[in-house]
Image (tube, rainbow over all chains, first blue to last red; front, side, top):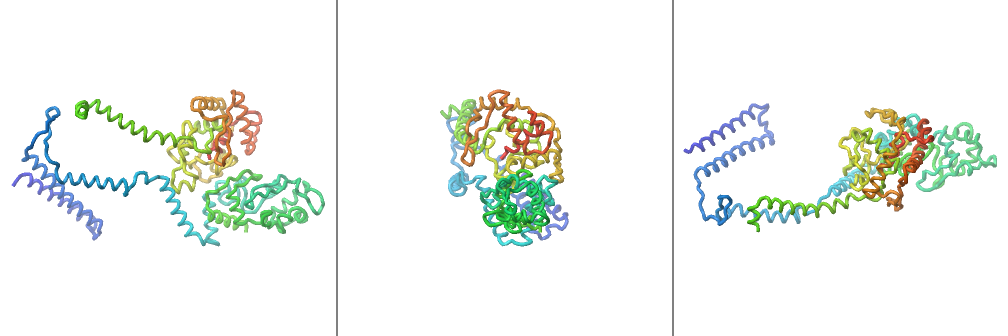
Length: 307
Length: 230
């Protein structure tokens, strides 16, 4: 027997022995686990195939000699035989050509992939899942969702407790504060709170029906406090004379005329998120990247804060 | 001919190089030139914004903040539309950054405001609890270098044809003209006008006074720059 085959058999035996020892020595062995069994089978076949292939070619190098007709050209004395192509190689080459044509035309057409296309598909899938999952969400669940959106998007300005961080943004635990009421009475307002252009006039357009004159500084101060207190205290007559015609009894607003200044509503908050807002504190940017459900949820959460 | 090439490896290598270069040029360059043109809505930086960009670079904001939104849902949810190459047309150098210790700032102008930046730069943890960002209080006292910003504007306008004093198309169909001063004095006057608009929304009385005196604290320029990132 050739020495080479002997070495091959010895190496296979050693490798199989090592595999057996390392698996058998490990905790639990194969453990009936399909993955472990597959891994060990793979290791055994790899060792066997590798050794057989290596032995075959080393043997061939030892005994084979070159033969055939030499081609005319040679490179620095290194020539080339005019042999037929090996059949297996030629068949593989043709098959690969067919596969290549399939790959470039049907399997994975040129330019069929784009990063942005994948992004768009991702977003579409996410949006439809979101839609299906949250379509009928209401009540406490909606408020909960609103809170999580609030903590992700709104808290950097309005604060974790929605208190506006010492005046850096509006305090959302109440509908409106005195400063803001005063500001809009004096300067008017146009924040599209109803979802459309509907400006409120400044003090030169605010007529107090009870006194028959334009609203005065003292009246502004009183009615601001009254509105900020949730329609309580002094100032009911001024409110009735000046504000009620648009903002309605109790300041609950009127459709297409004026927003509710007594209470938040999800619709009002959604509109602010869509359009942004400019008031006495500064500009609130719009948050249009939230979808309608998220806006409604934030609205529900903020409405729940001042209840 | 192929036998000749096989016998002359140097010329063979030159031939390979030429063929590959030609393919590269016609495949890559036209696409690249197309993608790097300014997109509609991208305007050159004004004098004050450019000065603010210098402040941004000087304080190494780009070491912790990226300016590149990748097309993943998780990123576009948080930062807005993914970045397009044309949006960096007037960035020299671009400030993509490579690490996000802080959030991406590519479109921060869409969702943060002047007074928020003011509060945040004075004491980041007061508006973002747990923030690791340091306070940048010196921005409120150091004055901005408008002259360098103007010099950069002149250079890019001359050598890279950046469209200053020309109408630039915006997303809503209108056009916008970004002014560049005709002289150093004029550029400073333009910057002061811009600074007044920013200072009007700020609270710090010292900053307001400085702008009224004709000085521009760095914070004003930086906020102008951050507000322009949209």
